[in-house]
Image 1: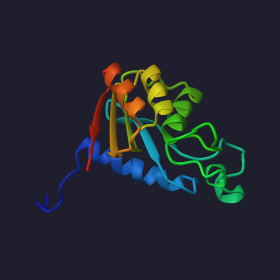
Image 2: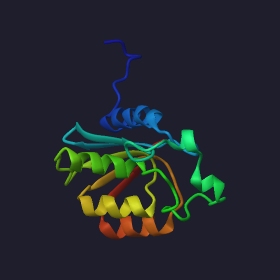
Image 3: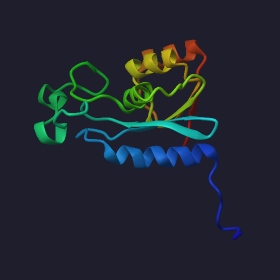
Length: 151
């Protein structure tokens, strides 16, 4: 094997997959991808966008932009689901247990996603980009979920 060819760690590998997943996002503000993994096997993926069967924000415009809602506020005023939410929902739709899994996400989870991650039994979060949500940080710390930030 060529010494210049370095095999990625599992965290690097799955984060790269999350980066590809986010390319499916239909959000006009920010693309986010998530991959749920257990025992080094992908269980589910998700990206942010409108619920299935509904028109995408790219088609109808961004509700949050129309109301000048700042990032991190009023999450309920959005047509889209977050990547982490979609990954958890897809696991549920297909009957895939995610208890004890790791979620790889390209952005730190908001408080809504943090609560879903806690209740889903996910034990570890690996993220690429920090997002300032003090309540999410507090709740994840209290839950004991391991949070790892990658470069």
